[in-house]
Length: 397
Image (cartoon, rainbow, N blue to C red; front, side, top):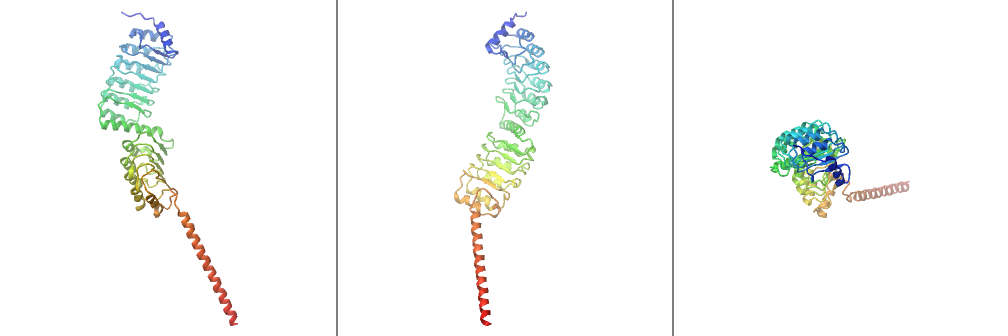
């Protein structure tokens, strides 16, 4: 037997509580499937952009009513936490043509399995979806694989999959995805992930960061101050999309000598002319990996300030011919001494350095002045000799 709901009165009260005519929250009202069906038929909800109905044990019938409603053309956010819409309910929502403005589905605690994830992944109506919350469900690795391959979810930015029985296999499948280029916030906490799965997730994030931040011409990339570490450096080093990169900014991160070694070994970074690693933790070994890399010999600007580099690192640069194209080396705020710093002035293969500045020009000018003085003395001596010859010839005459 259906319950009676004064749905119009409830809608009016909902608007009063929200203090606007775009938000309705029925989480604190007595609400069941019958109420949702009545709500869906109302003419008073066409301006609603945010609808919340949580903890009411709603079934797939409610999802069907909302999906088939003609009154929700402006709905952007649908929150149905702690209900029981299941895979069937997700199917209704995913296949709906009557939610053209939807941007956010928040469907945590709804007994959704891998089939529900598949319905979302295969939908042709969710191109505008930017946020998907499916925490506390059971989509598992299979469900995550469906989402990772979802070409229709290319605008997704946030995905919450906490406590979904996901393992490293699901995280690895996600790390290889190229279908979710805008996804940056993803929560897989509460799942059975080991370090391998966590690293795979980090790789996915950095690949998406690269795609999002890479300049239109593919020659400049700024990944500064993003807590990037050695795992992310592996992704950068293996990213074929960076083959035309000339400027790479990685300052204020957590890169160690291991990360520097990975960057140095990348065949895709051969065109780099500027590399900024200021304020990381690469140390002498990381610095040596960079300067001796056969792939990074086109560098003209190298920035490694505040990296715990000592005189040992500078000596390595000076002892062996490398970095012959380097014009500017920013190496201040390290653990070098003045004597170590001065080593940079002598090597022939570093004479092209414009920065740091040494006294080379003054020394050259002094040498030139000495040469000019010497030439002047020679000229005077030649003139005196000629005068002596003239006098001797005159006396003979």
